[in-house]
Each structure stands twice: as C-alpha cells, then as structure tokens.
Length: 284
Image (cartoon, rainbow, N blue to C red; front, top):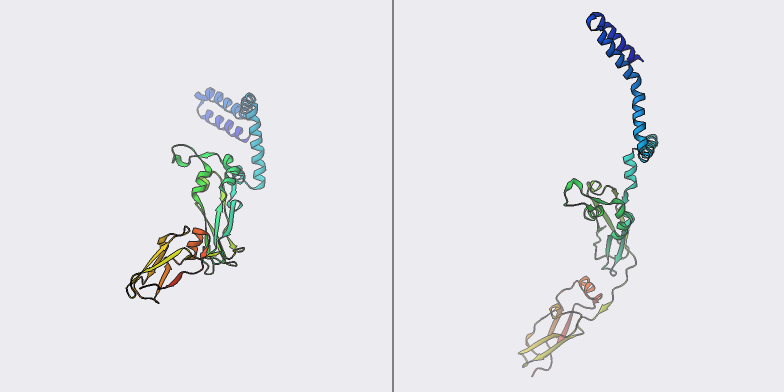
C-alpha cells in the first residue's frame, strides 16, 4: 500500500501544476493503482489456468519446489544433490594383486571396467562435451581414457622383482575435466599394497637339449653346438672358444640373457644355471 500512496500523491502534485492534463493523469493513475493491487491476483490466475492444462507439469513443479525448499534447509542445491547421485569412487572397481614368484614378483593394479559399465553405463548415458566429437559418445568411454592407475615400488623395491613383504604404492591420475566429460563426480584414493603369497619359482635345465660335437685334429679341433629343444631357441645360447681345440680344453656355452624374469615370462620357469662347461675329447 505504501507504493500505491506514493503513486497517488505524486499524480495529485503533478496535476496541480498542470491543470490541463489533470483528467488524463487521474485516469492513468487509477489504472496504475489497479494494476498494482490486482497484478498479483491476475498473475496467479493466469498461472493457475496454464498449470491446469498440464497436470503433470504442475505436479513436477510442486515436487521441484519442495526439493529446493528441503535442499535449502539442508544447505545444498539441487545441482549438488544430482551430482552426489552420480558420484563414482574408482577404488570400488580397483583390483590389486601380486603375480610371479619369490624375488621376481609383480604387482598389477587393474580397473574392473566391465563392472563399472554395468553399474554406471546406462545411468551416465552419452555425452558430447564442447561438441568435440562427431556424435554423442558413451560417457564411460571418456572415463577409460582420462583415468589411470599405476604401481611403483617403495623402499627400494622394484616392480617385477618383488618378494613377499615388499610394499608398493598404487597412484591414481584423474583428469580434472573428467566431470565435464562424464557428468559425474569421479573420486579415487591412493594406497599401498604389501606383497604376499609368492612361491619359489620352478627351475629347469636350460642345457638339457644342448649337443656339443668335437671334430678335427688334436690342437685344431672345432666345437659344433646345437640346440634341439622346443622351450628355447638356438639364439638363446652362445659359445666361446670353439676353434683350435685340444683334448682336455673346455668350451663354455652360456645363455645370451641372464635375466630370470625373462625365462619365467617365456616358460614359467627359471634356469638352474646360466652356463655349462664341456670338456673337449675324441680329437685325433
């Protein structure tokens, strides 16, 4: 009502100074006063008619308003509420395990993408952030590209050369823009893992299928080395001092690689020895 009074007395004052426009101004003033008084009622009436045309929209509006009111009391916004509904904790889908053998163990940290897709694939839907793709792409496809986890040894321990009791750390790398790409809040926590359960590696005789033949005259003998097995190849061996041989000399055949982990990865076993000596005999 204060605003109505201001409008009325301002009109009276102006009209007193301009008598010729009095009739016109009084008419305009009355119109303005009616507009102020009736505006709210008219507005509510119009909105009411529109809402009645679509009961579902009216109900949705009421639910949204009730949510906003409750959210305001709780100190959060509707946007924050939705964000919490789409929060992904990557640790829930992390698997850390030790493989290999004692002294040659390796820790792997892997993400169970199948389970993650099953739980969130449909919920997150497809996105096309900043229109950078030719078409919308499943949101989790961005997650696979922008979220990584890596393992590194602690206290001097080296991954792939681990023993029981060693500790490694797994660390997450999450692109800060991932929420924009997926529409979800993605979180992850770094952690540590202690190696246990590794067994001693089985061994094998790498020279079991090596054949060494000596030919020629004594003092001019030659050693011919052949590998006849299937686990390794001839390129895994080399021999030194193979010419100018005499009976009683030694020919040394060695593995070209002395990394046990290499053999464990190839055949699941490690060599008992890296070299073997053969005594020259049978020369004329």
